[in-house]
Amino acid sequence: MAVQALSTVAATSKSINQLNCRGPDSFLWTKNPLEPKNLQCQWLGTPIKFSLQSKNFKQFLSKQCTIRADVSFVLPRGKPEPTVPIEKIPKWSAKAVKSFTMAELEARKLKYATTGTEALILGMLIEGTNFASKYLRANSITLLKFREETIKIVGKGDFYYCSPKEPPLTEDAQKALDWAFDEKLKSGDSREITTTHVLLGVWSQQGSPGYKVLAALGFNDEKAKELENVISDPGFVDD
Image (cartoon, rainbow, N blue to C red; front, side, top):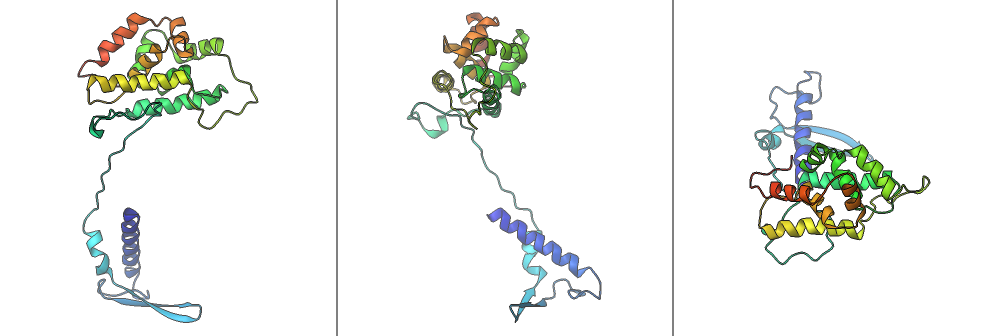
């Protein structure tokens, strides 16, 4: 609201200055832009006078107003919040959140009623710029292959079915996200929870659709261990 008020004031002052520069014929024209000018208008038959004085807005025009804000990204959690100081609670990376959003959209595209572990992987592959998706592609697990295998294992929803706007998480998918959160919290690392943590969370849910599709495409415990070593590196970033 404060920002909107300042913007309105600045815009009003700008309009006034533009009117002042129109020339001698303008009803607001004056040699001195700071000289007060009165406007009269009819409102329901009653004359109303407005006093316009540019210097009233000078303090807003002489400097820029900078507003800073911290934005935290949060994904659904199936457990109570941990009893630790808020500054120690790990945050989700922007790419992990974007991948989750893509997962919900993909679940709707496939006409699924829920967002499962297979959709979580599809979401990170669709996002495409995160480390997990790059690792999967490097191991010949592409978006098209994963989607085709998903349809083979899970099936495709009815063509006429209308998925929810935000398909709720399956139990396995929620456990995968909780696993990623808990593992990050246990590590004591202050960095963000990444898509790689989500990938390992999906792999931890043996028997889930996402696990089955990954296994069918060649992902295994050896690759999961390799990823664990990568994300434990202090210099690891999710890009």
